[in-house]
Length: 134
Image 1 (cartoon, rainbow, N blue to C red):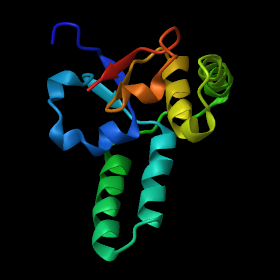
Image 2 (image 1 turned 30 degrees about the horizontal axis):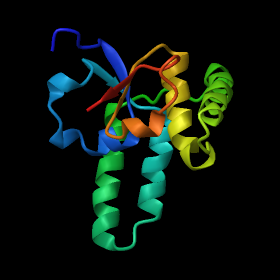
Image 3 (image 1 turned 90 degrees about the vertical axis):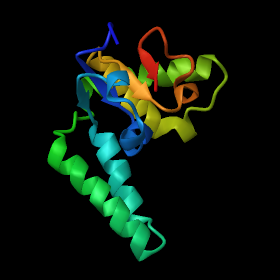
């Protein structure tokens, strides 16, 4: 891929599906956010059985070992408010998209593209976020 980004943020679903994705469709240096780490911890806590919990714990452990998560800091918090306003402007409810919008705010505030398996989750944000479907 000629225009492959040097760095970019993987949203949670993209991280979970990494084994199914062509590495050439991803940034050279993938990044995870603290929000994705929180979602991975949530997944472990909400596992319904031991097999699911073990698989999720393994995925979380790999993320912890391989990534230094990008924080949701003051710049991301300010950008989050702007992204919420953009979602409302296109008549969508931001509440069920809070975690996605927080991940988007971290990427956007750092001028990094966001790689996602669910581009429709980021509808209306194109002026402030480069969304790359994978």
